Structure formats: C-alpha cells, structure tokens
Image (cartoon, rainbow, N blue to C red; front, side):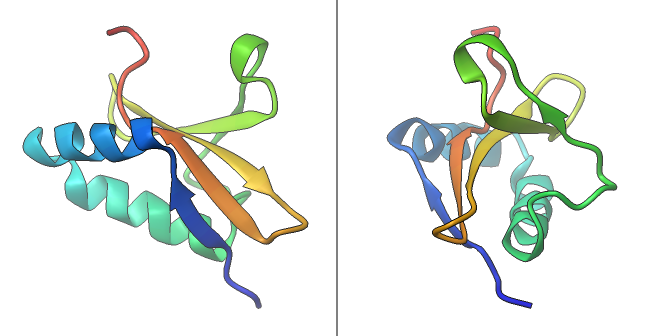
Length: 88
C-alpha cells in the first residue's frame, strides 16, 4: 500500500508547537501515522466537516482539541490544516 505524503499549513505548524507544549505531541504523532497509512481508517473515528471547512475531516486529539485535515486523493497527500481547538 502506498503511504500518503503529509504536509502542514502555516497554522498547523503553529498549532503543533502549542500541542507539544500541552503534552499532546504523542497523540498527534499517532494520528499523523494513521493518516499516512490511510486517512479514512476507522477507528479512531473521524468526522466529515461542513461549512467553512467542507471537504475537510477532523479527528479528536482529546476532548477539546482536534486535528483537521484535507485528503488530496490524486496527489496521495494529506494536508494538516489545524491541530488545536477552533474555539480560540
């Protein structure tokens, strides 16, 4: 099976620093490894987003924070959009 390439928006890079400071780096890394293998793997569950983020998906990092990503099927790539709460 071909692995998906993962890349990050500038916002996701900023969020990754916050997540690391909050002690969530290990959880984020596990999710990213899953996305590399199969962005549609279930479990852990994912949600298809609506509204401004239509076409993107999210997975829980913890109760408050989510990893939001887009799957670019033709490029076999996953674009990480956010890794922090959308409530801030």
